[in-house]
Length: 446
Ligand code: GLN
Image (cartoon, rainbow, N blue to C red; front, side):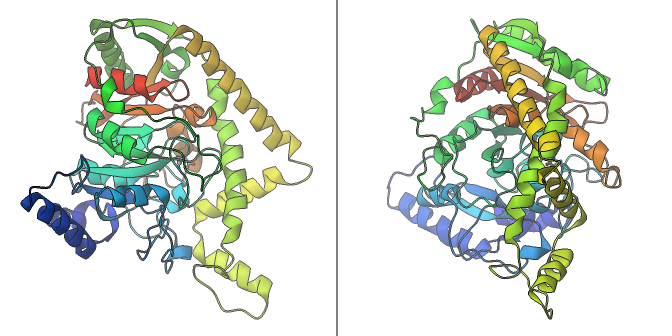
């Protein structure tokens, strides 16, 4: 049924870079057989799922939306996709993204532009745009994305679905192609908070193959799905209601906050004065890490190779051809901010700012259980509207980035529509490993 829907909708939506129909049908048949034999099946067994094309899948192309990996078929499986395979989830295919997850609209993909299912002339957000649009268009039941600065929450907001960026270290990054390693996290997209709880339960947990993986017990998140909010302290981040915020987004988010109150939560304003330095700090830290991570695309180990007379010209020709403009821009930025003479002024300074942002959050969580804000200052913009102006594109992550810098969990949940019928998202942020609160508040609100 889902494969038929994909065939019908893909010419318009373009969520998928590759659809793995044969494998999907084979896997689904196994589950059918179990059901026919009256065997019990697990919660995600037989559930059609889409995977962002930045997670390695054995024998299935993994392009990261880049020409440089056009021919790359991984010889190993990422921990998260392996876990899903092991419990019998059915992967339908790999979804489109901004090249190496760098972008906010999925327009930086080297292969195709994904449309927002609510208005095909608009972007689905990014960088996990394909995973968000696939859920919104019901081309899968749930999907996985990655979030380095907002790439799950921002497209979830634009596409009217639930998206979660877990605590840094909760979900293994083994087999996730690295963008900015100190910020990257894998997380779920779904129609409902409950579905995200089920999917996060399936992918979270310690992995000795990822040195930043947290060795902590994982609770059953579904036990936190409660419908009243008595005793829950909500903080509204003052600074996220400032300049540049679309008035309709502001009004809709305020209504959502009123609803939290009526469910029993206490609400107060919380100031995070250093929040606004998140964006500039991120655009030093993330490109710095990216410039180092992307050094591995040298035309030798994997990916495309341009013929050349010398080793150096093979490197340069291959990278010039294989990387798109945004990726090149980040490599140049990051190489600059890491170079001797500039390191202290930029990279080190940005790391100090990162600590200050963490401190703002720590102070806030002394007073409240959960912080709320709009997920994005606007609703989905038109395709092409921001492609010539990278800075205005960067601004769409203003409210999501501080969460990654502090390593915290964040959720975006649909909270209404603007006058044109485009979805608006409410962002909720909790303290480290307090995903339970996000599920509690999200489920009660929904
Ligand atoms: N839009 C941000 C960037 O381009 C965030 C991307 C992400 O979270 N992967 O870096």
